[in-house]
Length: 243
Ligand SMILES: Nc1ncnc2c1ncn2[C@@H]1O[C@H](COP(=O)(O)OP(=O)(O)OP(=O)(O)O)[C@@H](O)[C@H]1O
Image: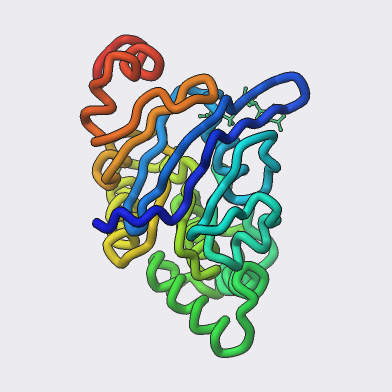
């Protein structure tokens, strides 16, 4: 795995009014790796994603993508540059088809038009196992297919970095197995992935490194099983019981 840093948070702070949620987070993402992010509810994981993706302005620190400071870039510009994210609760356009939902992402997220947009949509739907459901209205999809669509919409923006926010929640064991295999294959094809997840066994099958956050700071990071066995992680995240 290359050790080139593609995305970096340096001393990132975030306040919501008087509530400080991120307290100087340092995070380095290496090109081509899959990085897992775990931590107790309220640790600031999703807030960090917002700051990286540009949907939330940081209150301090900086974010560097591919060697450039991107703090002044809005979310649309970051997406066009190659940072895509999924959300905990998928919110597709319910009245549009799977195809149309993904086309909107290709057009708005990556500014693709015509054949290039159609090719990106077809490829994303095939990658996510949705090709046969392309004409289905999004409103008729079950949970797993909504998650597939959320992923396909992110892929249609042609990302270099993919931020996955708890995409495994609510899935069956068989669905989790499929999801882990899909995320691993995306990483194996060269996509850089950051995955926030509470379903630990699904996450640990895939990630190369793990970060544990607690109370707006990075508590531990490194080789996944070493991090999960770290006494501070066991105490803060696993309620004192080792995984
Ligand atoms: N827009 C907001 N306004 C005020 N407080 C917020 C806002 N967004 C998040 N918070 C607070 O920031 C803290 C961190 O939330 P965040 O969602 O980032 O945590 P998390 O680690 O992703 O948690 P979870 O695992 O439950 O998703 C929480 O206390 C939350 O209530």
